[in-house]
Amino acid sequence: MHLSELTLQGLEGVFAVKTLLNEAETVQLAEDIGMILKPGDLVALSGDLGAGKSTFARALIKNLAGDEDLEVPSPTFTLVQNYDLPHLPVAHFDLYRLEEPEELDELGLNELLETGAALVEWPEQAGHLFPQEALWIQLTEVGEGREARFASADPAWSGRIARTLEIRSFLNRSASAGSSRTYLAGDASTRRYERIKSDEQNLILMDWPEPEGTAGSGAALAYNRKVYRASDVTSVIAVTSCLQNLGMPVPATIAADRGHGFVLQEDFGDERIAIGGEPVAERYEAAAILLAELHAQGAAERQILLPEGGVYDLPVYSRDALLQEARLFLDWYVPETMAHEPSQDEHQQFMTLMNSALNVANKSEQGLVLRDYHSPNILWREDNQGALRLGLIDYQDAMIGPLAYDLGSLLYDARATVDRALEKQLEETYLETRMAHQPGFDVIGFRDALAVMAAQRIFKILGLFYRLARRDGKLAYLAHVPRMQAYLDRVLDAPVLRDIKDWICALRR
Image 1 (cartoon, helix red, strand yellow):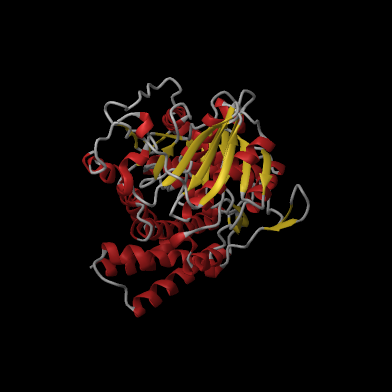
Image 2 (cartoon, helix red, strand yellow):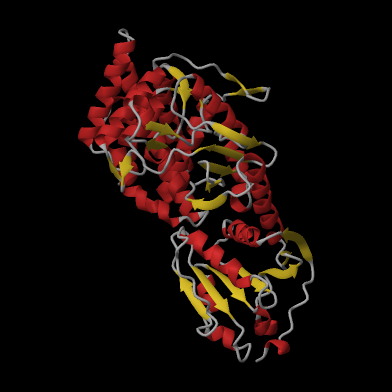
């Protein structure tokens, strides 16, 4: 078929138009779109020869690959080229030589979309068989530059495109207009992370949108309020400031947009205190010392002054919040692993036993609790000295509670297996550091509180991992369940938890 016989699709329902002044802005737009792609996304690239479709596709694929030198040949003759990229498989189609629209099925588009995303040049060739939910990006030459017009029958695309373009605008104001965006793995929350690269420095972007889907349901939001999960970037800004004032190694906040939910911080790199899921003893020991030194400073102020004015109140880890978290064990873990739904009496028994155990923790030292003090959130910076070798991230849910909680997070790391020998070594290191700062430190009381808070956290995590798998489809979390089960058996040997251990043994029978 000759070019003269091809007719570009007239777009209906255009929801955005963006002017691209030069080639660099076309590449930048490709990065912006690539950052929001997920499995099932189909992007139709429409435009005449030379309009920039191939430039756009190559830039997007190279950026997702993290390899500027990646060969991205045109699929003009093969019709499709597949890329198994680290974050997301991407298929690049060129339908210019498609003989009949029905041939699209033979190329396996639907199968590819089950696990990845697809970019399609000359989508008009598929006619009415082209999926309606696709995002259409029509590129046209305007003077020395281009214009990109966005349309889709799927209304969700409008919000997604607006969000990624808002991020670009924020970066242009706060970092550098020439910054590139690359994907960073996130966590179990609705937050997204990107590495922002420019000639001057690398930074980390946190994108905290309003929760959607099951995460934004009334039940999910109500649970987050009950357990005091932070709801926006204000907590990040506030707790960062608090930890900086306490001398902790946290990334400086470079810029923030509280209204949109964006925070730009220093980039501390990717190296962590565990390598390949295996703890590095020297690094964990440094983390235990840092935690002890933080705790030795005494109780933190509940009110934190925000840099731009105003006050952030650190929540208190209430008894009700601790019980609600532990209850996840009954609601999600027990039905999956013990072949029966807990009865109302069993619920009551468990909550009564947990409530009694928490009396012990309530009498222990209270202070600033970071809540997720474990390997994913403790970075290692080899070139620095002392405490600055460490870097703390993901502390936005910090609150006032039993200090033993964070040591339990480290000793029973959800993502790396801490064996008994290292556990005891780290506990002794922490206690020795505390006693060096506070000769009258209550070791016995702290150890009891440590057992209780470690058990509470493990109960919560076991339930949470099954909830993430069953409710949210995040099955990868189940790989960590055996580790947490082994930790639970270890923790329940503490005398202060004897009644809970007996109850669980009876439940397993």
